[in-house]
Image (cartoon, rainbow, N blue to C red; front, side, top):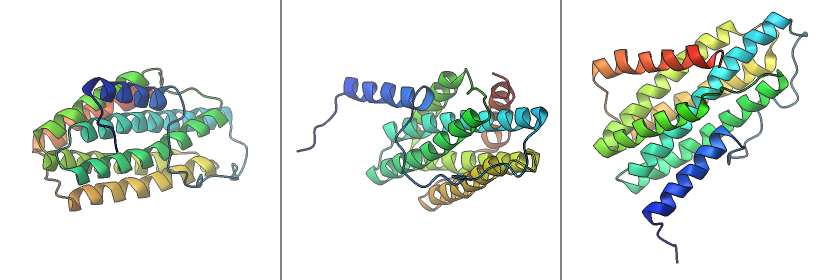
Length: 215
């Protein structure tokens, strides 16, 4: 018989998930690492290494935020199938989180020191979207994934040409984000209001990317 978690139990689960995302190694789908065994085409210069690290730190912070978003939405989702979809998407985003963290280690660089803020800020937004309704929550996922996909395309163009491992990782992430967005739309996600899509969400994204680049 499956135990029903109390509100306090669920709170502890979310604390555990946040620590896994920001401080430890989260549970993944155990997909093969896309850059396993790959190396730079040529040794990166100090400036190229710095640029790659900044971009991968931004993407790692974005994946931390994605974890918070999906966990918050799963917590308040009304329909079981929507909750399951959010939880599965969060698991796949964990793959991205681990890949980016590993690449940052290889580049001898740090993760964003503000990751707990990115996580819990996104968790709050995800939970609020879920409370409004599953269609709004799914629409929020679709718009978020669309924006992330655009950012990844920009980062792929900015990466040093010799940085093959980072390039392969971001390419796989871009494919996954596209699929997550399509799934959310097919599941009934509604188009968000213009001010939220074109003003609020881009502004929050800009704050995170510009800050995570250095901190």
